[in-house]
Image (cartoon, rainbow, N blue to C red):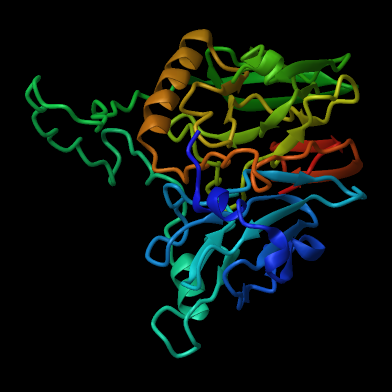
Length: 395
């Protein structure tokens, strides 16, 4: 296992240096408090993790949101509500030069969650203020939208450079051009609906897999397991649900999401034409020791439109972790294959490995806690989302 400067520093007796406490995520904030410290060689910085699920990960001034190879890293440290004692990770200062850190949780660095030991003075080029500003100017970890042929913004795939000669050794991965599939076909339909003594006419788009527009007389709950047996999958991957039914997602150990997307942008959160977002559960951290009382996230079906979704955890969409509600089998296969292509081509913030078990690398397990929330998404013939979070660390 790669050892960092941290490992070497821990070989020195801790008694030789002063101890400096830094608190991570106080009151749910995306901050280290204090944000920077002055320390002597041999001093020990103790990071106390207060809430949520953060890291302390070494970077560099020029690349504030990227893991510095060989640098120190706690890995993710999850803290459940009411947890006591709080986890603490110790870092021994190896030298007097500036040392830079950030939180590797999705977009936390871009929101200014950074820390420094011995940064330059306020007016120096390598000041903490300049480091934080540089971090907040980093691009978000997502790829540009992909438009289908015929769309006004469609751009033909760029010419691919020739492959290197076979005798050349290289670590570069050349992805094939992304081929955008045509959207699912639909036909306009009109139906007369009788429900609870009322008779009305409705017009809708009928796709492969579209249910009847009549609300269910006996609404059902369709259960989808998220990450069963450690797999990067929803089980089942597709369900057919009538208007009034509920699709309930139950999360198994690890840290997944249920995030609504669209057929042509399978690995990006949906933003509707009116600017409102699609539904999303947020990250659902489930401890490996949990055997019952799993967190759940439920979506009530209010119309006949197909629903597409994916897991927002890094690289999971690229692994094909997607789902469909009221979609055709052939369309879902196309959607999943397209998600793998798009996900593989996305530029995502890497999660660096933890740096061993030398006091700055172990991640304590979260214990079950409880919270509940309800979110209404859209209006009219939209979807109603009810999330029941049990043992969840909301990020």
